[in-house]
Length: 312
Length: 281
Image 1: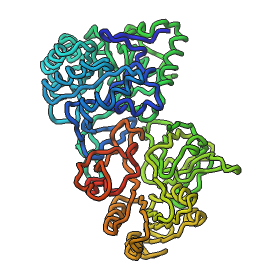
Image 2 (image 1 turned 30 degrees about the vertical axis):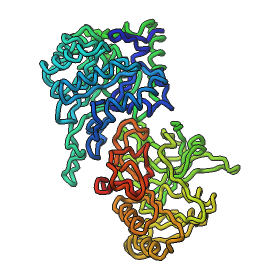
Image 3 (image 1 turned 180 degrees about the vertical axis):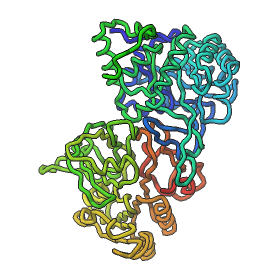
Image 4 (image 1 turned 90 degrees about the horizontal axis):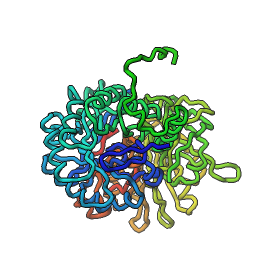
């Protein structure tokens, strides 16, 4: 049974990746999760410098989901390399570093620094965090901005390059195409949906940042649709995410067009989710006689409609 | 190392309209638990609420042969998750992840331990009282609530040889006033040569007042903080408090950082905490 895939020159053993921002720097989970058994670990977003992030409250639950406005608190790229990367190497994790920037130069510089270090396997360009004012999403919300930052980082690194796209645009597929044209090896989507929650008794926002990003099962059907649209727009691998909780959810994203997936919010609910998802994928492959899981990518049959859904 | 157990509810003991004690069959967690640690409990099988809730381990339950068999939690009905936990039936199973967090460090004689609890902040103190009793450390519980009928489980502390100082805001039991009133008097009366350490858990304003009193009287003070948590394992950075990296006299000068309550706490030296930045609840 082959669950593997490739992103640029990088081979992932399976399509399950821990989503950035939802798995610390990976090392937090090393005692309870076999990091080497994951397809990849996308570590928390890094700027050059350390960042304190937003004051609490930073999260609030909503039906089947949650809002977060952490504000990209982080230890910066230098401390990451010194203090976290050695353990990730020791644990044989496939490390995808989520790179943030307030300027184009910062994205380039961090990517260049990371390229010099053994144990960094890929770069995920965070051009989609809804929770910071400067940089980031301003690149991700403009087609020339996306093309520009991906092109610039492309010149600075030979590591597989994965821009992470925001869903807070009219046509996400055009951004996937811009990223592909600029030399991206894959795209990942979706980051969170900009959202808001208010306490009606105090009439105050529930998050210190006023607005935050919605994640979890609540967004899954929208994310599946966006993955489907991107699959039709680009040839590079698509990494899908949005509220994945079960192996069926993984399969749904893959059939819609994702080559791999990331799991974020549901890892909070069940940190042992990974073996359950892998077992579920293997069971599905066995039941359907699938030798290579990549065979199902984009296999949704839109010439037919599911008619039995009422009884399911 | 924390484990996740699909734990059967052994008992749901209702204490009042708002409070209940839930006991879980969870021997692995009970065997590993240290004083002041917590568990993350999924309160519903569905997705509302989606996230787990953190609870201090209230009691480490033991069988007839004194082997650890499970843990209990002290639940106060506040929101959706705690309301669900107030009505679960024995036999139901809920995912319980733990033990988690930095524990209390019990102290040894001749030092005395003073535990100060406000309301549901009683939760982490039975495990601490047990550890203190095992070391022969004299312990006092200062326990405050709004009314007499909100003071729960004092018999469990009496059984551990803990001296009780109770306070109610309406004067219906013990000292009339907040728990900081008898605490302040006791601190003032204590000779400086008699070592004592404070352990505090309760509403933020109360913990801050206790920390101020401890500072004014030159006593060490640990606080157990409760914050909204996403994961309990250090992955999400939701539960941060502004805390100085170092402790003790002079630490006021060191630069505070957003520090995760789940892995760097929930127990902190009170001098580390920047109270102005801690959400009050």
